[in-house]
Image (cartoon, rainbow, N blue to C red; front, side, top):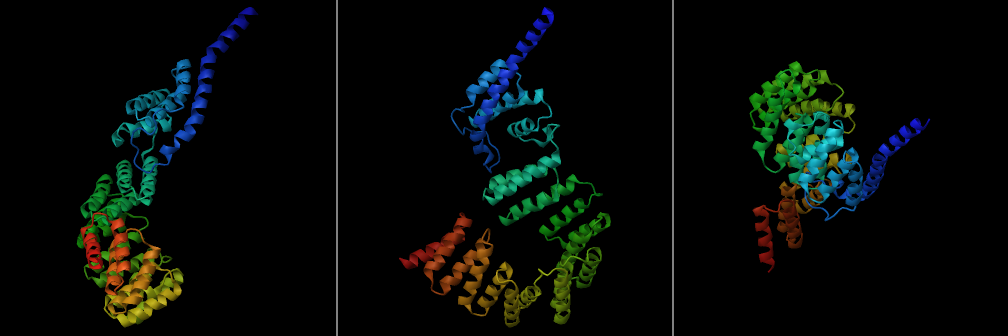
Length: 419
């Protein structure tokens, strides 16, 4: 009997350090819940730096690891503390030890991956590349929404390195394009194409996108054509091929591509609109209206009058453009493009005061990253003698593009004239 009692006491005493360590680590976790918020709220790409001088969780973790040096959760938290205090080497060591003890711990694996340089070739086995790439892509979009472009690019590049995803590539390429980095945008798609075999539809999509950006329209037609062969859902390939053929002024072939798109997805409106545009550019306005109305039957959100207004604007028929664009605004008064094209039409007709009103409406709906239009607004206001309004527009544009010398010149001109 006494033998069993001794064995039981021995087992209980052996478990005491682990229980004490767990308790101390729980206290540390409570403290870290508030301290770690500064990290969880950051949109920048994770950088190890000093965020606080000393964590209040430090003393509890010292107790926990003193009682049980192999307590995995305490090691994980000790890495967090080191990260907060800017002790990068200590953070990495603790996360390495935590991962050795629990190789499937994705939290330890993720932070060790980021701390050790985020090299896609050394990705821990417990982290799925596609899932992690999606996480990084979403982080990049959050960074973009917070105007942290460098962070957005860093997140996006890492996402693409882990998985050649079409959506991430499209977003990253547009991010480069928006800042005038065309070669970098082309390189994004070339990387995707190189990472995928020809049997993958996205291989051909990436080649087509790269060709479009480089204005290599024959190459784009060929790439999208190859995509229609291997894709189970070829609608998008037919649509892009039709657009590339239009750039080559091969209108009959473009119509054929759009009709193939209709066969693939008769429930989508874009092909109807594209066929309507083709008719309009051939001065067949009755045919254009017929296609636009079919598009509206498929999708009530389609505004056929906007399409006609833009076509007349491009052809220089401002009177008709104004009629159709005003009709478009009766359907959707806040539409960005309808307001914009009506503003451009009115400006060309010499009705600059009205043009300013509609341009301001367009910018109010989509103000981000449209600095050239904001400069245009300033120019129009200056032409109307509204120097204060012009200066406000130029300064707003400068906030969007702080290094753009052309905006600075306009501001200087207005200030000097006022003085």
